[in-house]
Length: 324
Image 1 (cartoon, rainbow, N blue to C red):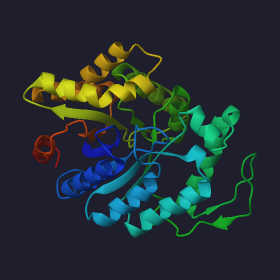
Image 2 (image 1 turned 30 degrees about the vertical axis):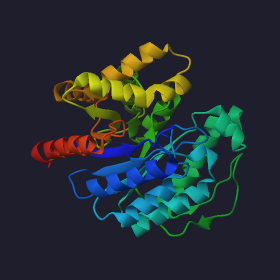
Image 3 (image 1 turned 120 degrees about the horizontal axis):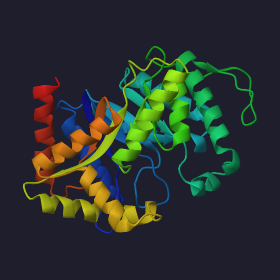
């Protein structure tokens, strides 16, 4: 099992874009010297629930400032970008980093984003599928030649070609049953969302296995990833309160259709939040629910820098003891 970090980069009245991004850079620089395998950056548009709209740009900066750790886009939304441009950037990152870049991507989860970027909501999944085919052709062969309802152009060379044979590693955000089925047919690993329940993640993992088996896809080498929030403190209630404050605006906006207190209680119970014993037990249960091979953690809800570093150090020591 491999471990890494992911960054939501939430904004609020106390956290400006400058301070949030500076904190991310500082943390990445710190963990580059430790046992962590990967850092990943979340894409978000038009709300305070993330300061990064261009994760590939940030990935390039992080790759340039680090020496050891792999860097990934957590959920690059390919449906709202031109696929050739996405492929060019991904191949370039793979080249300049000599294989340290991982391409994590997603379909668009918000109709409002689709409309803003002038994409057809009524044929969103078809567009997503066509975008992926173009990107994957470019990553794996260096060329693409689409002829579909959305894109049609002569065969082109997408430069630079990928450094990694077969293209950079990929994973896709498990945003819906439709996406999970699609990924299973192609053998693309999932990354389970941090704000989904264990029950939903377990349902998606089971669905993936069933569809893969039905389609003759070998999943022995498929490594799913789990994203999970971490906030450890000797005072478990303090950790839960701090995480609650960090998540309040997000839960009210993103999960408006749910009962706020019920969803918040679920997140606090199923994230790695509380004392060391409570948080590790919750993390173990979350991993078991979806069968993830790798784990990405966010420590961003821990407001005190010294405490955050102390928790990162504890996790790092455990990686060194049990997983190196």
